[in-house]
Image 1 (cartoon, rainbow, N blue to C red):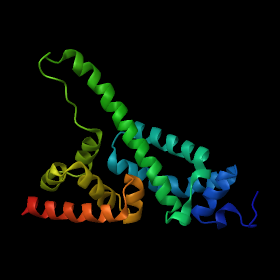
Image 2 (cartoon, rainbow, N blue to C red):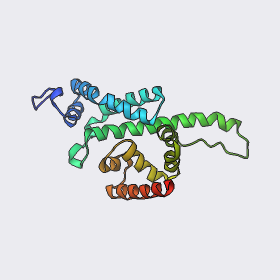
Image 3 (cartoon, helix red, strand yellow):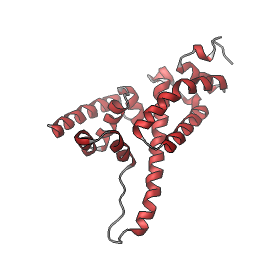
Image 4 (cartoon, rainbow, N blue to C red):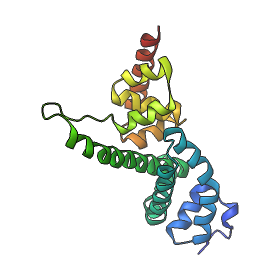
Length: 190
């Protein structure tokens, strides 16, 4: 299967994903060995629930195994690590939404008929766990699209390009939102 003659340990992450796309289990194991520790740390920065983190990790690597052939890589300016994080971040949001939906069901049954049950957004719960105090309050008051950009670029350390891929918006939009978010944060904290 390996046309380059290199072992998985000698390849970069993009090369590993390309081999995974061909069904190479050793490449998948090497990709997991390299990326699982930092991915778990990044997920824990957004979620303190170890069960959810474990589920997201499992779902992420299952998706990588199944969809490795969809990875376009450097041809579209992406990286294997950015692609992996995009999958994990989306799985985490899905897990938060499932949890919020499950939490809302009993509240809706017991809520007063005139007052609808409102649960905080899953992303806001994750943000509250990651950033507290005055900065956290200012961040939570930002418009969701600005908050998402700051969360990706500052809390997760993603590049403009990776944030663009994660959020599905052009890089110029990411830069504009980041500038607006920084300005709003300065005003809120002054």
